[in-house]
Amino acid sequence: FGLDYTIVRPHNVIGIRQNIWDKYRNVLGIWMYNYLNGKPIQIYGDGEQQRSFTYVQDIMDPLERLGTDPLFSKETINIGSGIPYTLNELAKIFKATVGDCEIEYLPARHEVKKAVCSVEKYSDLEVSFTTLQAGMSKMWEWVKVQPPRQQKEGPYHEITKGMYEHWKINQHDKL
Image (cartoon, rainbow, N blue to C red; front, side, top):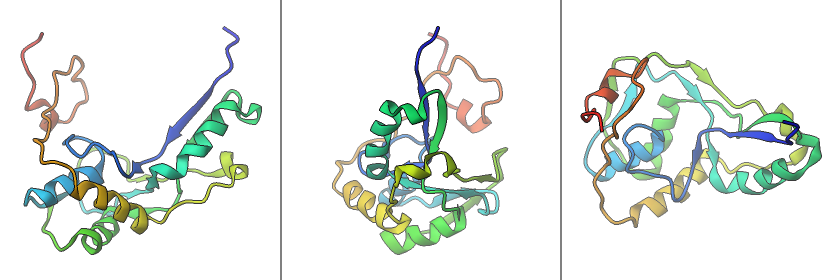
């Protein structure tokens, strides 16, 4: 239709105001919720999956520019730190940040082994990224002062094809 657009895909964003009550996404939010509630943190498979993590404040200014600068018109841009960490490394940093905890290794899921953000398309944005350790510490300070809440159970899902079986457990009757 001749519309101008830029598609921006923030990559594994962590930080304050992240939903720690959703049991299906945001690994650090899930782990922090579990830690506060005396549960082990969980890693699926051997923990050697790689991810990169990005502190939320680091992408705010770039998001504005990506949405307004003609240089990025009709582009799809992944934005994130691009620094890979295995989940085992993430767990080690997590323990150093929040305190010692049990790690429960669960059967592997069908998932991407390495999902690390490519930074080439936005190199001229001059983004500086907070270290994972510093970002996790800021997030933890925020999480510690949140009022206790129940973890939300998954809602009814209209499409279940390809969905993990453990997500289907709490399916409600069709509305």
